[in-house]
Structure formats: structure tokens, C-alpha cells
Image (cartoon, rainbow over all chains, first blue to last red; front, side, top):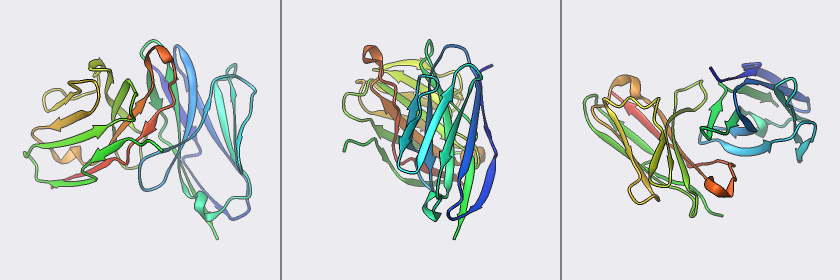
Length: 111
Length: 116
């Protein structure tokens, strides 16, 4: 059965800290991995990763995929209180063309 | 910027009543998804459409849930009768999909359903 596992489940840090969120997966027909940020509303798209070893970067956020070890990390540097959210990882599979979501990592950044 | 539209944003209903949610995907997006998200969990796929055809509804509780996308554009998800356990956020998402092969998925604002 396809599955996506995120860790840690929750995390509390102080402003300015750097955090690393993990996403591991076991799926057939892997196509891409996506990261989303979810505050108290719908998820907003952050990154889509398809190739191993190529870092995607947007401001203080960056992400990389390892297709050999079947995981991805999302890094946030110099965290701010506005980064407090649930971060969701999803794997897109070809064949069925559907997304399989992890349960998310709840990040809380304290001032 | 194009967005996925959903309505209503919030719905409170009594158990055994019928409810319906509407979704209008980004123009040109062939693939439309309905998800259910229970608090503290990731979104769970209920049904996936490619144009007007259902691609996957294996997790849709068909005794009470139905979904349609008659003209391959907007879509409606219905629950009848609603049960207490249906309380959740219902998310609609769309992607270009199809032969274009772009699978970045964009979410609408969601409908938060409370069943009392």
C-alpha cells in the first residue's frame, strides 16, 4: 500500500531557529513530490520536486528530494512566527495520477 | 491570479440532512479532486475526475456520498444523509493534468462542515 510518512509530527521552535522537516515515502510509480503550507485554511503550494539532488529554493524555504533513499526534506531558515503552520508532503503517482498525503508536521514558532 | 472557487465556506447541518458543496476549478484544468480533511490529518482523496469522467472514487462512501462533474468544468459533492462523523474540511483541488502533464495541484479555500 502506498504511504507517505512525515516527521516530526509537531515541532516548537523560537524565532530565528532553523528547522528541517522530513517526508519519506513508499509508493509505486512515483512521479513527483509536493510540499504545501496549511494555516487555518486550504493548503498553499510551496514546491514540486521531480529530480533527485536538485534543490528548490524560495526565500528562506528550500527543499530537496532523494529518490534513492525515498525521502525529501524541507528546510526553513531564520524562522518567523508567520511560518507557524502545518506543512504537508504529498507524492504524486503516475498510473492512477493521484496524490497521497502525509499527516503533516505542525510547526509552531515562538516570538 | 486564477483560483479554485468553492462554496459555501462554512456549513452547519443536522445529522440526517442533505448537504451539497460546489467547486469551480481553475479554467482549463482537466483534473479535479475532492478531498476530506479531518482535523490533525492530511487530506484524503474522495473522488478524482478527469474532465467529466470519474478516475478514482474508491474512497468515496457511495451509500451516502455522490459527486458529479457533468460538463467537465464545475463539480458538486453531495452527502445524504449527513452523519456526525462527516464533520471535516472538504477541499477541492485542480490541476492541468491530461496530456499536458502538469500536475501541480491547487486547492480551493475549502468548505468546513459541522454536523450536529
